[in-house]
Amino acid sequence: DAKTTQPNSMESNEEEPVHLPCNHSTISGTDYIHWYRQLPSQGPEYVIHGLTSNVNNRMASLAIAEDRKSSTLILHRATLRDAAVYYCILRGGISNFGNEKLTFGTGTRLTIIP
Amino acid sequence: DGGITQSPKYLFRKEGQNVTLSCEQNLNHDAMYWYRQDPGQGLRLIYYSQIVNDFQKGDIAEGYSVSREKKESFPLTVTSAQKNPTAFYLCASSIERITYNEQFFGPGTRLTVL
Image 1 (cartoon, rainbow over the protein chains, first blue to last red):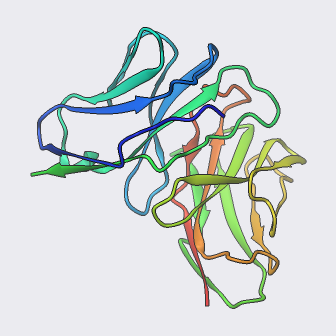
Image 2: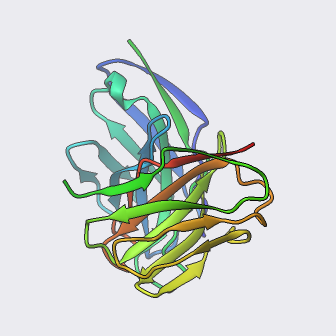
């Protein structure tokens, strides 16, 4: 699996935007970029995913570099409920038997300061 | 409401005993997964199943067993052969074998071996 690199931790003030970076220099042409987040003692929650173009949904935006070697998850206005560990994951777009797993790294622990 | 349920939330086991963790989904998803999470770490795949009566080993299957007799259910048995079973266990499901589809996670079971 192609690897991703994220900072171990980040802090942000409440009601300010947050930019969470992810490097994936070995990404292949068919890899999708997924983001999940995990609140304490809960299962991970899907946030967003993209392939080449920037993506927006109700939770966040995903900005993907033109060369696709990095991406940034953007929380437009952080709240205390956004405090979680955020995981950036690459997944192949075509399903091969045995290729369906999510490979989680250690993610970025986001702390929101009131 | 549709979703994934795991039971129990907390489970204590004596060394040498087998224990079965429950995972049920009413999302009509074909694929189901079991992950293990250790403190401060990401998730690691134990087993996954793409269809009823079929399942495959993940990265850390030793000491675990599963069954998939019904589409809705994917129980995990932690056997006495698992050398370090104390961990947070997460079950997930996804709609089909397309890897850019999101995975939905249950709330998890925290297993402690006494």
